[in-house]
Length: 439
Ligand SMILES: Cc1cc2nc3c(=O)[nH]c(=O)nc-3n(C[C@H](O)[C@H](O)[C@H](O)COP(=O)(O)OP(=O)(O)OC[C@H]3O[C@@H](n4cnc5c(N)ncnc54)[C@H](O)[C@@H]3O)c2cc1C
Image (cartoon, rainbow, N blue to C red; front, side):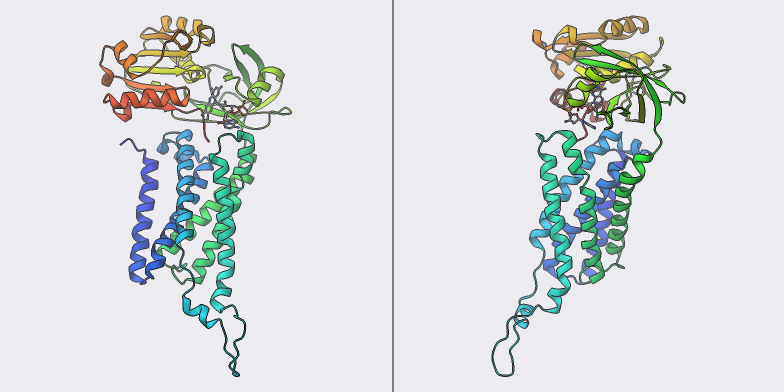
């Protein structure tokens, strides 16, 4: 398996917590009915906390996870796991022992039965249950919204920000359980781990909401908006000098103009040594349409990044690049960065609907000729050309395993090529892909 160090770190944390938890279960003789429920509940909380830590975009751990896009993918999987574990916890949480309910019915001296009173245990449990229930409802709703792909990104992201609020509610619930100490006490090994992760999750959320937006970004000025075929090239001039980046990396771009202030991620399509920054944006939705139609030169632009670890220049000598549509942008940056004598043999399959949608095609061909070792093959789907592992295999003469692969484009295309390569024995470590999607 090609699991990155960061993912192993997450798996190891769960393994350590599991060992601590079950040791505690045995040592503290936890009642049987509570064992599974508390385990599911605490693991759910750990998933949530780790998800929040990842979404704070800590750059120091980016390499360990293989790039920010992978960190977001893991964040999503942790969110789904958190919900399932939450449901498992909620469905199995032990109720009050029947004896307590009977005790609540007080028999008076005269023999008449008084209305049932709340037992002290029930009163104590009330806030714990209340916080648990609020969090359960909130999380379930937010995750259902997340999974509903029909909700536009900007609406979804607004609701998604409330995850942190519900995490705080969950934290109160867990702290009350730990304070209560009936099953897991605060100062037991699993209690300390949980308390630490809850505080870390809350700190990550606070950082994301209050400190992160104020963090200094790279200042640029918009100097040109070039309208291309169903895409727009945005050219920026640095105010404080260019920041270093690797070809294939992306950045979040925030334009200081009405209607453009939401940060959007785009791959840097300029070369790493250029004195300006270029992004090539496919016209897809509201934002990218407004960039094309309404944006004019002169605006201030804040750039946050670079992020990502999709850099073919770090890879082996023989490489296959597959670009689907706008997925050409990382390869544009790579080709604009490479110099003759680069020592690589590259076959770039550039897949578009029709030839005129192949952005910068003549520049790419000219670069390939100048650099040597690069072959560009255009695939037009309107003409019936489809890319897959068999087609690549036939083109390479069958030796699929001698090459490493860099894939960027629509999710179904990347998934199909990647699955086909794996089926034909290409090791996972030789297949690299970049997803233009965080959700
Ligand atoms: C790592 C990465 C690199 C990318 N590089 C490029 C590139 O080089 N060229 C290019 O054309 N596109 C790129 N994209 C995609 C680009 O970010 C979206 O197409 C763009 O933000 C769409 O905005 P919209 O409002 O016009 O479209 P919408 O129709 O509103 O959104 C389409 C999809 O874009 C994504 N998206 C929208 N807004 C945001 C946001 N604020 N933050 C994150 N994702 C968002 C969502 O998945 C959404 O479903 C990249 C995305 C990622 C994650």
